[in-house]
Image (cartoon, rainbow, N blue to C red; front, side):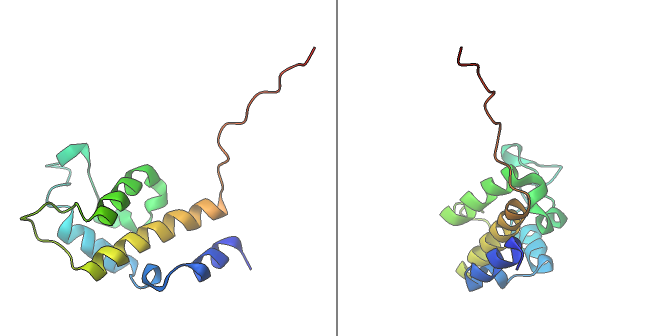
Amino acid sequence: MPVAATLLATLPAHAQEMSAQQASAAVGKFCVTCHSSQIHMADLVLDPAAVAHPQTEAERWEKVIRKLRARSMPPPGAPRPDSATYTALQGFIETRIDSAAAVHPNPGKLPLLHRLS
C-alpha cells in the first residue's frame, strides 16, 4: 500500500468528510471577503480554487490551518462557519498537505561533509 494511502487511512474521519468543492465554497464564503486580490488583508490573498491543492503553497495554508484551529478567523462580527465546518476544512487542508509531504518528503538541507584531518 502506498504511503499516501496509508496516511489517508489513519486520518480522523472529519478529515475525509469535506470534498474539494465544499472546501472551495467554504473559503469563498468565509475567507475571500477579506483575503481577495483586491483587499488582501494582512498581506494574505486566498484563491478558493487553490484550496484543492494546498500543498503547492503549504506555508500559506499552514497559516490558515493555525487560524482555523484557534477559531480566530473570520474575525468577530463577520459571518463564521459552524464548528463542524471549521474542523472539516482544517482536516481537508491538513490531509492534502500531509499526503503530498508523505509522497515527496523534503529532508531539508543536508550538511556538507567536512574533512577530519
